[in-house]
Length: 447
Image 1: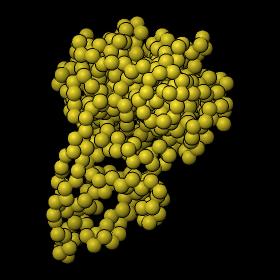
Image 2: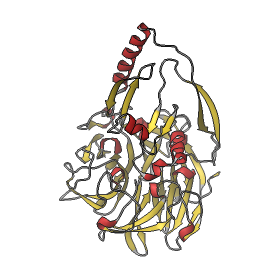
Image 3: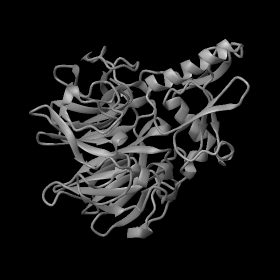
Image 4: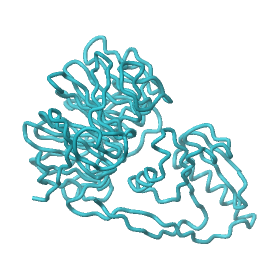
């Protein structure tokens, strides 16, 4: 496993940023889990775990996110609810600093902060977010998200290619020089591997025979408002989390806009395909339905399934008429838990990945129930969900039945009777046997 080391960093001597984490889901209250998230996303300011909402109540917070501005004496001088652009934030903070300087209130001094970062080792993974198994070519594609690269291996874990420089960035080019930034979901057509490059707000295409990476959608800037679509390279995107390809259409789980988009690979045009942009759970015609951070996609013959993470729900869209959105399980933004069953009884907790597969001769949807540390199986037409692997406790334990443990599994992909699992916080790829129901850890070996 990647080893952590302590670093010292001196913050700008006039502004100190303090993050306050007031958790929505039960698992997010765990301090160790919060620490993993801080390391994973490279957060370089101190973060308070406000697990009991003490700070939330003290500052009369009502929304995620909320910014509170304090002067040098600790008095509240401003508040902003919701997202804010960097330009606007920079302007507001700059005006405050100008005022404090004039009044002689600033006494700048460095503040040393201890940080944790991960050491990189060539053959190790770091927070792998998604995985894609291709049975026909017997290849496994791993979004090695924490290392900002894609690992191409055999289905047995022997590494064939490392794609990406390893440091975050958005440049195109050869395998060893191109830069990605938190790559996640992938789709493969036999030659090209399409990647949801989440933190670059872009879709990248990897030419495997040509050994090159290029950007096919997104400007590199984060879309701040709903977009109408257009020429794919000219339209800003917002946190693409997963992709799924059918013929000349690449479906994109655009988590940041609460929509599913479609990229026409032949014409180079991109546009919203499902979801109005309103964050909620509401079925109906695909462009007026409401989604909430779709984060995992899975294609079936006539349906596009997706994990709608913020409503802890499983849903699908018709690929043909009537082109409507349907909910299998899930009730709302604040209805979550860990309960198997049928229909409205079922509770998930922030699922991030889905995979369409065959289980015991039946076509099913496998689900990475991320914050419950489980892999579950869903029978869509029955609206029935059952635990397949995992006992709900975070950890890394192989075996059969109730002893198996994961730590925030985020992506799934099936190849035959094997289900490959991106076990994100364990920095590992796990393999579930859909027949024998045993779980093992896949060794990643440099060739």
